[in-house]
Image (cartoon, rainbow over all chains, first blue to last red; front, side):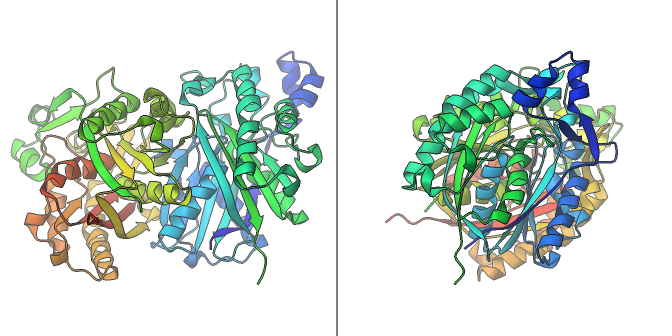
Length: 309
Length: 309
């Protein structure tokens, strides 16, 4: 059985003061702090890249758990803002940076804010089908590369980060149940254009409030569980206001659903692993995670602690 | 059990006469015909896109097999030259174009010439793990978007195409065995730069001749098969000269390994499905496919005919 053994993350050293940004955009500071919920945004500097940030996340993983690079048989990297325009796939560049074995499958996944929940299922099922025992799932989607500097809606929101999740055959958490949905007809709500990232905040907000709670409830029902059975709800950290309302609408007890994006912003597919890294210290037995955004795409999964034999 | 039920492809209407291109580059016409092996290159026109070409491939699939769009639960699209810079993932745009159900998982895979062999394993294992029965794997990687018009090495080689493979629980072929390898340290042999696609033809040639035959032999050995047990070898159609030598070095009987890129060129991840679509009419019992290129990445898989009960 494969599952999650450990999670590590990396924030680049660059920082944007979001209150100063608020002033520049002539936006109310209280709105930025309370509604968006972001005080500081980590930001790629000139020398940062998807590959260097992913490698730095891996270094942090190695401080937590013992890894043997020669045993890594699979690397999956989730991004929609890759180095080198995605050719080669950035997982191959990470493969080179980490000096991994040639007997290693590498591929990238193109997904946004639902990417972590998808990516976990993709890498675990691919590894299981091919008899692989150790693998790495990276997320790194530096939206700073596509932000329109005049667009306050996105500039005040998105931060850069990277994460790595160690998938092994001696996991702490295993997948119990998952649901995946797509509404391609709504894709214009979040898209890259010649002007950079374009976001229709209202459309994304309505989507999060209408569709995400429904999927959370369906996933619980299909696993024959209720919110009471879940110790920890890890929802994609889109914005504070969106999160508070989505949590309420889904009937999730607020104390079980951390909101923590003040020092990170919305880090796209890295937001759930960032949160998870910190929360795993509390040893939750059962975790529900839900990612939603670009696509429009949304995915919910329940992970359960593996009881030691 | 999931597997391949059918394959369909689409070539855009635009055509480049490769002999005229040879004249423009002051390249010997015989070299273009015999060594590269390409007379005509299909080429995207203004109105073509990854999404429109993928949708056209799906239309062709529907002419071959009965499909019920409401039953499609998974769409995976392999490209490194997506529409809209890959944000949103193009599988979501195809999802919209085909008017598929919301209960459908969609994600893109970033891989080059090994993408089809990988993609088949990725979609099948993901669908199986999540109890899905019908899915679509698309390939469409229009290199014309990144060709440097002054670079004869690449302009004479790459053609645009799309394919779709119908994955179902009533398959004609099921996966028997697969191997996946990566050599990230060699990635500079094929990469996107600010000048467009850069290819070190000699490095790619050496890679194809050294590493691909070894993997083909290992895959056969691990399945306890020999070349005699395989009816059809589908090798990525890189160039005629590279193919002839790779086939020889792998000990494959030439008559079992079609070389057919004269009217398509190297269509990246679409080259194997393009070939497969035509060859399935001959009802091969056992197929070995091998894709290799960008990454560097190479993958080999053996598919076996499913015997009707």
